[in-house]
Image 1: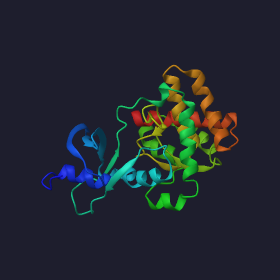
Image 2 (image 1 turned 90 degrees about the vertical axis):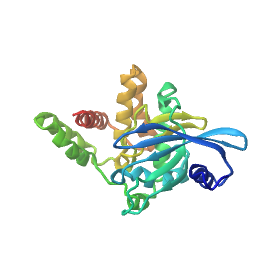
Image 3 (image 1 turned 45 degrees about the vertical axis):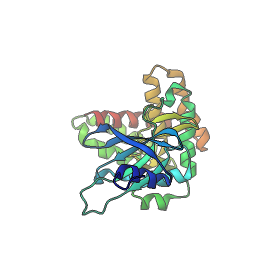
Length: 262
């Protein structure tokens, strides 16, 4: 390994192993993230990792993912991370397992995504203080709706209905929420379903994650599977879900999605 090759040194330190033939290619680069695929050889085998950089104002995932990866294999594997000091003009980064081209888990059985979501919840069920220390916000359905309200100016009736629906979910037990549990963010790895893209993670109503997933599965034409997901989640999470709960979660999710599109 040559000391004159910073990329090779970086990968070798991250893996604590000898590597060779290290090269990289930019996959995504915009104002919110940079994804760089790094190809290399280790013990004669071609391998890849992904280096993800995000702005300092959106660095929750860099803080959270290493913690989650130590708790469960239902999230992407983390090799190393870096959070530059505030005075350094560089983005926080995390070196990840490469699942960019992995198939969506919705191409398999969507119920397995619900199982992965519940597995993550259980893995950190007693870690509320640690999650908050890492910067994970606590956001109730009502708070999510109020955050979305400015984007829905002029739609007072819809907002009123959403606020009523959010109030119905007030008693739902809090858990770690992904925040964007879509088919794109559930990937199939050799070990099963892996949830990626945790930038919108928060502590709140996990049923909203499943309502978001169900809407995505339904939009893909699998209405039967979509309809079964919320009840399955409630069963696995050990929570009693009424028809009112399910309708409320669907409405809140629909309003949040609409606000993000405006």
